[in-house]
Length: 150
Image (cartoon, rainbow, N blue to C red; front, side, top):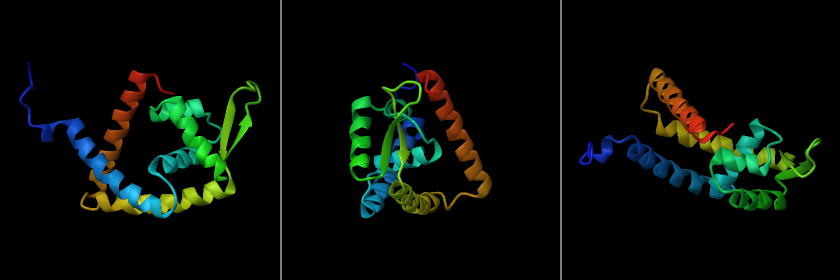
């Protein structure tokens, strides 16, 4: 088997997982101070960019089960951060929007997340950051195509 003895530190998945774990620990700690989980923040941030997504669309986007996303959205709705409204053409589909409180929490959390992310790449030059971001975006686009995610 080719690559069976490959050093895991040189593997894309290993490096991304190490980074993700370190980032997630920092995000979880900081967002907890704001009364949010990382997944709740990610959902609020996504809805701030794409208003009107359904729970099913969010689940596909984040690659989680519809049930898991439904529980997360319900928790945000109970806390007054999102509202649901029926789709104009397909009344069984519920469209999600941020409330004013949800928008405020998203902006507060976004500032904290930006601070953490900037700290994690502070040793990179601006061109290195640009390459990192564009490369990761291309990798995500490839995953989306493979998974048929809109």
